[in-house]
Structure formats: C-alpha cells, structure tokens
Length: 163
Image (tube, helix red, strand yellow):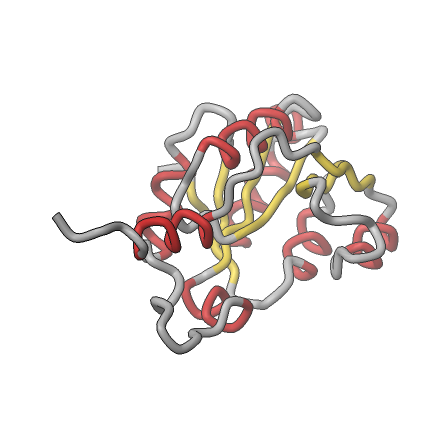
C-alpha cells in the first residue's frame, strides 16, 4: 500500500527528496471514482516529480457533505477502501488520510511546491490559499475536462427504474 500517516509521509519526503520533489499535492473525497478524477490526477501528476493525494476521512466527508433528507449518507465508500483505490492508481505516489475539513495542516507540514485543485475553484475560493502562499507554494488550477460529479452519479443511480 502507498498510503501513509502524515508523519510517515513527511519522513519519507525528508529522507528521499529526490523521489518526491518537486512535490504536487491535491486533496478531496474521491468517493466514487470516475473518469473526471482519473484525468484530473493524471494532469496533476504531470506538474512535478510525485503526486500526493490528501484524502478526506469518512468523518470529514460527513462534515463537508452533510446528510440531507432523501439522500444517502456520504461517503459511499469507506476511507480505507478509497485510500487503497487511489494508491493503486498509476499517477498517485502517496495517499494520506486527514480528518480536518481543510488540507491546511497537510499543506503546512508537507509544503508541496505545487497545490493542484480543479478548475471549478479559484484562488479566492480555495480555503487553503493563505496557507500555500505563506510557505511560498504555487497553486495550479486544473481544467475540468469531463464535468462528472460523484453526486451526479449517485443521483443517476437513485433515479434508475426498478427492473
């Protein structure tokens, strides 16, 4: 497995910077993986030597995507399974699960040269922008090639007619 605790990941990066730097970091829920995620991760990986994905824990997903009447509790896939799936992907060099609602602590600790996020954000709407700017990192917004969302997939499944 290539998923780490934050301390394990920091130690590996510090011991072997030639394998990790320049480091690209991104984060998200990655609940039901779809082609939009894959293309995004491929594009992010091209920005540096290694790509680390900060994965929202089950608890943090529940905070940022609270349950609503008539909708399933998120995440659909448990965090350890999501981490294993992400770690198995070719563009991903490491996965770290975090429990906070933002990736600020991971960014401050790892100080990746590049923080990649989807083009549906702007630097002004990213809550982590001040943290990245504080240590001198660069924010790279990646164009969304295929407008697919996990929420949309879940809704489509929920609306299927019974056979």
